[in-house]
Image 1 (cartoon, rainbow, N blue to C red):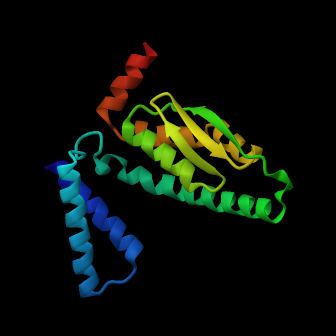
Image 2 (cartoon, rainbow, N blue to C red; image 1 turned 90 degrees about the vertical axis):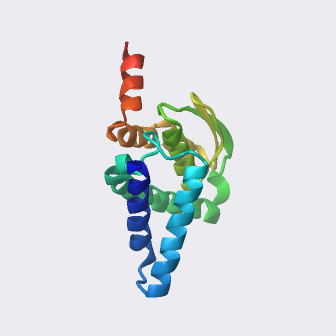
Length: 171
């Protein structure tokens, strides 16, 4: 039950932060949206310790801020490539996926796809196949900076599964 409550609070805070309009009708629509998402999450059985938004919530703002910076930077890079296409050299690369939970792996794949110049094609627990627009976009992923940020987000969450998996892999 505490996971449901934390999900409601996280969704409400996110909705209030993103909405920017505070009128009775919109409060009602926001509450309805939150109720629908919570109901769907319960039906899909994705509310629990691994999917507890309360574990990730404090760190998410730092990650989102970093990700927005990456998206802006990548947008500028892609715009330069569009205006001067001689540097475009699309190719597919494979990068390791060091995350321990499915939620973190999906966050990694989605973050990669949100960043212009790269699109996640396939993900397994060990590797991710990505289409990169050029060598610079590929190098950004090969540097593993995004993967490390998500590992930081995952490991700092207090998730006992992550701590247990990290302990097992260190042995």
